[in-house]
Image 1 (spheres, rainbow, N blue to C red):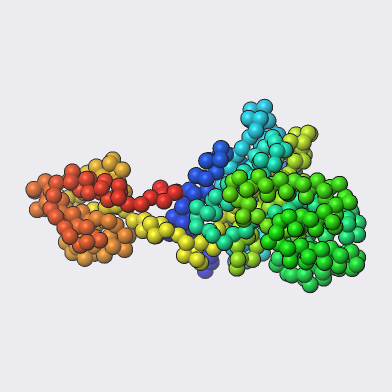
Image 2: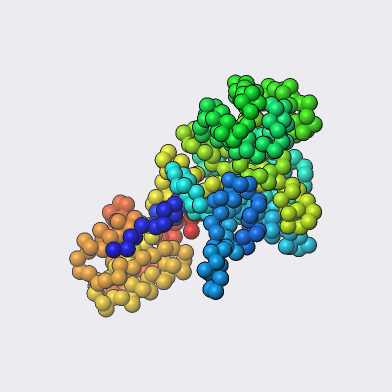
Length: 456
């Protein structure tokens, strides 16, 4: 028998799942729009050359490739791929439509991406990202606004314990050079350092050794990171360490100065208290050129999202560099944590129809459909129990299971009198009344019911 399980690392979303997802997406969209970001969508499939060479060796291994079709199928070669993230497609769009876009283009995008990764808790092969990006400016106001926006999303969702880790790719480069790691080995060293929060100091030391990074250079680097971790609560103390360790390198000085400015600007948005300067933050993607950031919460392996400045990526498509900075929230991990912590509002679980309509015999079907139409026209949600039943237990149990607010009953007596029996399923009270009164009752209940962002 054919398995009915979805492909490993993917999921089916039942109605309860979708209500939670739409709630989170509704909050994300509302906050992003308040910061002036406009929506964008791109195809799920990209030409393979659009994606390759943009994510580093580790990322390139995780691209889902699509084999050539038709007469070329036997070649085993790929010409298309499922998008790996939303940033590279954005860079392509900016290069393609540069003349049509505003000078400062701010976009948000909420769509699925695919990675040939090993599934784990909160990690899937198909998952949604919630991206914001600002194109066209090198001003550090951009970083401050991005941090405020993503922090605002999490606060609206009820997160009180998140931290925003902040670093700069130039500081990483300067740190590695100051530790004695040769430039050709920087890429390998960054891949290892990016695992520090997952495998610990000893694990990273072993990984650096496996990547043939000299032991004394690896030790100097890890000792510096340990000293920075001890001072994590004090951003200025950490930046002073960066100055002392890597300040002889112009890149290190410039990075430290920018990080100080971002922290200072974030004090105006209220996000500064969330920031932690973390020199170990590497972010595995190779296209970052400046500030890099990541949001973490306790008890979650990995992050809720991350991003950074990538001033050279668009230039790979356009032929000239365009300043850009962005952040991506991981919808799936946010939902995992919120579900485990019971953070969703009660109204998300109570999403049944405003009204359930049941009829006692087939002669009442027309009246049932007409009542449902009137309530829907007035903005209510209605479900009709589709089969005539003289045993109200069946339709009543079904209405309760669907979490309906009211049950309208139409039998031959009601039909003859031009009325409807309506039962409040919360109070169990009922009355016989005119159909117009049912419309009023539903309207009143909807007016009094709390609505969450994303409520459809």
